[in-house]
Image 1 (tube, helix red, strand yellow):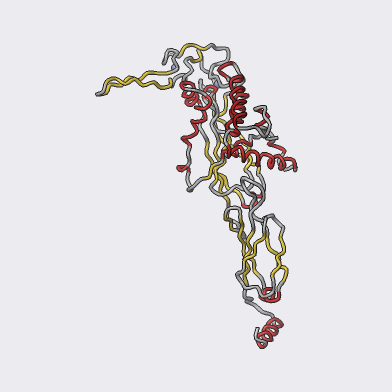
Image 2: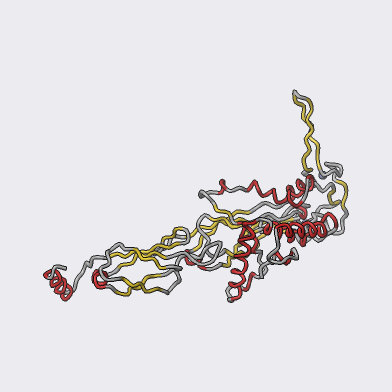
Amino acid sequence: MAEDYYKILGLEKSASPDEIKKAYRRLAHQHHPDKGGDNKKFQKISEAYRILSDNEKRRQYDQFGPAFDNMSGQGGFSGFSDFDFGSFWEQAQQQGSNWSGFGFENLGDIFDEFFGGRRARKQDIKRGEDIQMDIEIDLEETLSSQKRVFSVYKNEVCERCGGSGAEPGTRLKECQTCRGNGQVQEIRKTIFGTITHYTVCPACQGEGNAPERACNVCKGEGRIKREKDIEVAVPAGVDSGQVLKFRGEGEAGKRGGSAGDLYVRVFIRRHKIFDRKGDDLFAEIPVLFSQMALGDDVAAPVLEKGKKVFLKIPSGTEPGKVFRISGKGIPRFSGYGRGDLYVKTRVDTPKRLTRKQKELLNRLKEEGV
Ligand SMILES: [Zn+2]
Ligand SMILES: [Zn+2]
């Protein structure tokens, strides 16, 4: 089951924005890690609030959540029931074809929401890096949600020290660099006077302390690079250039800092038969001149492998006529239903004729057809 954000906040689906805000304040206060609360629980509450407090995201969640539940109910993807479906709402449409247009600088905002002032900076410096990767999928794979497993060489929480960076059994001591302040002063003399600038201490990442002996395995960083299989779900209806965000699947943070996110940019391979525009598909089918003239039921391909639909061609159809087959396009990425399939008829002039065909065509010619 996907996370039920309403349940996390103890609310009904019909909750008003005001009720959502109140529930969040109460629970965030109760579970705040600074007050000894469970950080995991607090993150969940914050995530639920982030989605439900945003009208657009809430609407998508209300619509989209049940769709995913149905899918797993059909026995398709039992393996990732714990997957954070909330990540999908984070998908961002990429304008161009490279990463530079994508707004990574906004990601820090999330932390400003959670923590105030100095704490936020400390989190930033400890936070793991984001990972970006590209995947290529077939057009057919956009018909349903696809489970994908990538092998990524990335920082994972060090098992020996559990991410603390301290050799097990060792105590913490005051950081030498910042003398326990967690920040270092930088004094610069300018023509306007002396400017004092504070930055997070690079030696202790703002913790103010350091282990007496650094962990043997991670050398005090609390994380270590290794090969890891990451399992993600690429949602149905995804389009080329779209970027999917998977929260917390990036590099592990330093000394217990939060993990970065994984961004997956999707490319869709060209299809032999179908062109895609938005949710619609376009294809061309060869039809015989006699079928055009007399009318017939003609088989048209659909994106589902091995399947086809029958198209009623009325008598007297002109070559190049386009028929719309509704609901046989691509599933809509956010919303229900599918786009349409447009089939254009084409007449191929026969190159090699049998004696009988020649005879018949000659008779048609004599008849003025
Ligand atoms: Zn320090
Ligand atoms: Zn370690």
